[in-house]
Image (tube, rainbow, N blue to C red; front, top):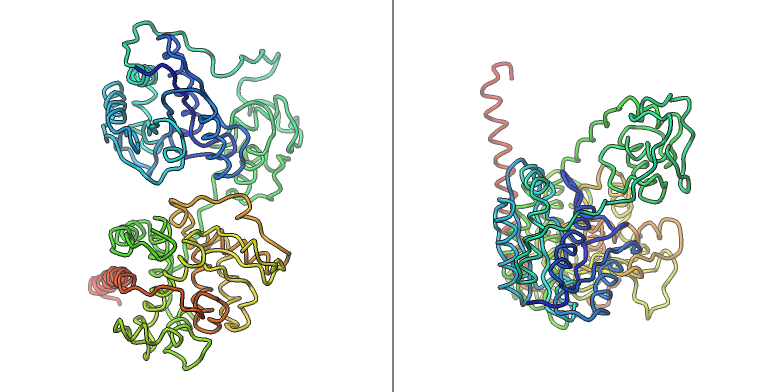
Length: 544
C-alpha cells in the first residue's frame, strides 16, 4: 500500500493541453483534487500540484517534476487527458509507465470498469519527461479522450466513480465513504439587478475592455467567447487576451486584443467564424500525414543510432518524411525551389551532392539527372545533416559558443542555417520565406509532427537582431518544413555554409533513402488515385 503520493495535473494555466468536448487542463485539475480527497479519506498522505506560472513547455515540465522531486513520497502520478481526432466513437483510457507496468494496468482497468470506458491498457513510454525524470516510481494517467463525445459523456456521468477508482487502486484500499465535493471555485456574490444572460445587458452599456481590466463585464466577455479555454474569473489576463485575438481573427474583425464595440456586437450576434482558407495545393491531407508518419516510424532509419548523436527524436524522422512528401508534390507541380533542389549534380565545391559524390556512388545513388531521384538523395543526406547539426531538434538555437549574433548570421533550427545563405539561392530562398510566412500556409509547417519527443528551452526560442534575419530565425524554429527547404537550397548552392558537410561528418545512409523512397511510392499512388478519379469524372460527364 502506498503511504505517500504526489499527484499533479499535466500542462498548466498558461501551457494549455488538448481541448475538445473537454478541456484537458481544467479536467485534470478536477481529477487531481478529487482523487486527493478520496485518498485523504483513506488516511493516505497526498500532495497535489498545478503549474500556474510557466509560459513554455520546457519550463512547465521542469516545474512539475521539480515539485515532485522536492517532496518525500513513494509514488508520483501525473493526470492527463488524451486527444486524437474529433469523433463520436468511444476511444478509452490508458496509463503510461516506464517501470510500473502492473500498477499502470491496474489503474487503466479500474478507470475502465468505473466508467465503462474502453480499456486501452498500460503503455510503456520511454520518451516522456515526467516518467523519465521523477525520482520515485511514476505513472501517467490518460483519463479519456477530450475529442471523443462518447468518452466525454461517460467521464462526466462517472466523474466521482473514476476518481474513487483511481484512489482505491493507488492506495490499495477500498474507499466506502464519499467525501463531499468542495466547490471548484469560491462562490461569487449575486450581482444585483444584472441579467443572467450576458446579451440582456444593453450593448451600448458595454465598456471597451483590455488586459488588466476586471469585473462583471470581463466575466460576461469570457462567457460569451466560444469555447473559452480559461477560467471564467472576471480577470482580463493573457489567456483572455489571446482568446479575444483568436476570436477577432476568426471573425474577420480588427485584431487588437481589446473588446470594443465591434467585438461586443459580433459576440452578441453570435457571428459565425469565417470559412477557413483553402489549403495550398501542395499541402498534405490529414490522412496522408498519418500514413507518411507511420512509414517513417516503421522504417529502419528510425531505429538507427546516429554517430555521436544517438537515436533521432520521433518527431524528426516523421517530420522529415512529411517535408519530403510536400517538396515532392511541389516538384511534380513545377515549384521553382523544388526544381532547384532536384537539379542534376553540379561540378562545384558549393554543391553537397558533388562533395559527397563518392559516398552517393558507393550506395548506387546517381545524381547525374535532374528529378525525383536526385531530390530523394538530397533528403537522405539532409536527414543525417540535421542529426549532426541539431540532433533533430527543430527549435535548436544558435551555437552559444559562437559570436555570430547579428540577425543575418545567427544560426537557427534543425540545420543551423543563417539568413546570409540566401544570396546563393536567390530568388527561391526569399520566395520560400514569403510563402511560409503567409498564414494560409501554416498548415504546411508540420510543427506538431516535428515537435514530438522534442523539448525546447526558453533560450532555444531566443532570436537575435531584427528585421528579415530575425524573422528567418523565428520561422526556421516555428515552421520546420521551411527550415528543411531552405537547407535543401543551401546544400545545393552554398554547402560550405555548413561545417559538418565540408568536414564530411554528416552520415549518408541507404536506409534513409529507402524511407524516402517508400514515402515517394505512397505519394505516387495518391497522385494516381487523383488522375483515375478525374478520368472517371470526365467519362461520366458527356459535356467534357
